[in-house]
Length: 410
Image (cartoon, rainbow, N blue to C red):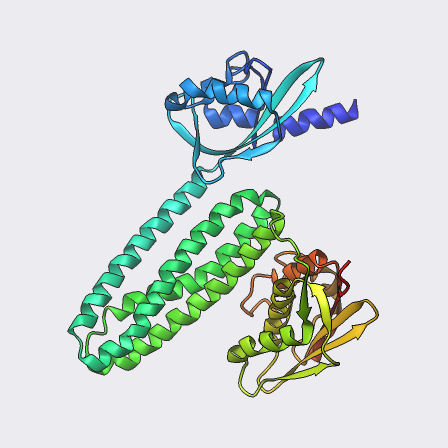
């Protein structure tokens, strides 16, 4: 009886709309959230076909889709790559996400529809499009200004054009990332909170700098233009880092990351990664490599490289100028053991147990740019490779991240 009370309470108090239909597509139950969402009074939906909630233009074909589902029932999300709408009682359309589940009882199939009102999200997307149009308008004005400047200034403003093109691409990637967010329901509350903080600062910087550039029309203002160009480039770089973390997490959560088994030289992978990471070293920072021989493994070189990039970029970011970053590699029995060691800010003991959680930031790192996804992604990648990862750290003295991966072909 207690379980039944809990289930009724869950149904009645759920913030998502829940609609239950029988094998004829007739609504047999609807929770208060669904009734309020579509503007119906209590129990007013009961006994009506589900098509009462479908927009007029989709009604003629909806029964075919419903029948097809009954023939091949499966639990699935709907709306991927396109917008879905429901029809409210007053005839207006409601943008929504819909997930379907099914079960059988007494020989009859029942279908449960879980419905989320995404009106606010659509408003945010529309606002983003307006901002993009405004930025494109500013871009046009800047290009017109460049045409009137002398040749030397035109050569320097090529940097600005490149930065603006990257900005447009980043906004496109940002929009795609927000669409993928629909499939990450279990972390959406933390994502919204974190993203609103991390995106606001670089986007505000880009917008203000792009606006100010239009005011500097004289040749002697080039130093001011260069300053704002650099601010735009730095902000775009931060946005790209954030987006890479989101996209990696999305692929992992969707199960789209698989490990390939190919013959790789781990020492060569480490050296190649370090060459790519050199440009982001701070002043007088340097790498120390301690690898014992050429360790050959049957693993996924791309995933291994992604793990190293995450760990080495963290070591650089959380270490001061002049501090070395040490990368160690050794062949131990049937695994390759790799360590990334820094002399940075370290991690407090109370934060250690949360380090591999998504969106977690250590208490002494809240003022440093980041999404809180790096170590979570590293842990997920190491798991895909069949390895293990661990961390040792002393506050204000440094951090060592150790991980192992199997090296045998089988």
